[in-house]
Image 1: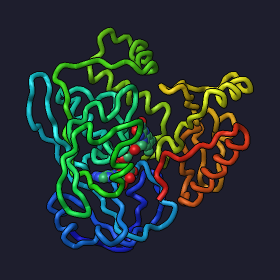
Image 2: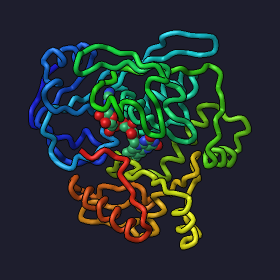
Image 3: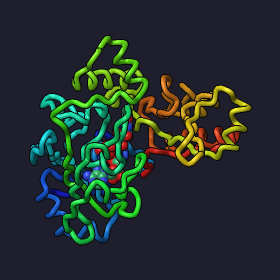
Image 4: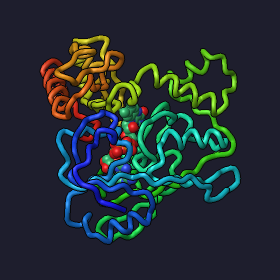
Length: 338
Ligand SMILES: Cc1cc2nc3c(=O)[nH]c(=O)nc-3n(C[C@H](O)[C@H](O)[C@H](O)COP(=O)(O)OP(=O)(O)OC[C@H]3O[C@@H](n4cnc5c(N)ncnc54)[C@H](O)[C@@H]3O)c2cc1C
């Protein structure tokens, strides 16, 4: 384990922003983590745990230690009837892990194919797509307390998963480093076509009883039509969260904009499609400096070439102010701005 200084983060974030970290350490084994704990640096200096950098925007250079998770390994931990318990190290690339599971006919993760980032970040944000969330397949999360260096094994319920949320983003924010995740997968394929666009795409391909591999491939194809490939166009995926409003605010907007896209929530509020609000405000395909709004999906901000984090923040503020002025609704970033 070696701590380096003044390292460019450009290749470590999917937006491709060229910010510098004043200190940087690659963690390749759990032993590296123990050595890092022994230095005491995580107890008294700012640090940032970084996976694939696919949910982050570096608005500025980072004055602190970036802890880059590069631990690898996928291992079967046990078999319980039809279930199979599989442990993946935090630095495994999420989409490689899902492909590995599909190749080995371990099912449950296929709807989460193609999400960028690492296994270690998946429980933090409770990644989700096409009717499945990481919480549906997570058995336990093994994580180290940065204050005491102790390992804690969090059960699924202890992670307090919610929509794009978990205990690691709330009361234990910046307190634990996820070392590995154990997933409960199935050897028998259970089809999940609860997400309408996926069901339609599968039907259009003429699959009567699709296999897990066919569903994984369909999800990947669907994603490619909507989201930019970070290797080609820099982005952090969906930049804004869908705002939640009261029923009366919703009804008022619906009267003014009959084509408003919204979903009623369990508690009678309404979630508005932030992408619709941004598109309606005329931002789709627009740019400010080198930061732009993706032409195929207004929820995604993109790097138009050499863009800085400050340009992304300026664009997101301009969009937020405009949406608020037009609709009286405040949208906020889903991406983490550092
Ligand atoms: C094109 C595109 C499409 C996307 N589509 C989706 C989608 O469909 N669904 C979805 O949910 N998300 C999506 N995302 C967002 C992103 O892929 C997820 O948030 C992903 O989990 C981030 O993983 P990461 O390793 O890149 O995390 P990073 O961006 O590196 O970090 C994210 C957060 O997790 C913390 N973290 C990372 N690793 C660890 C660790 N080992 N221990 C403790 N904390 C850690 C970081 O400190 C930070 O707070 C998309 C992003 C892009 C660019």
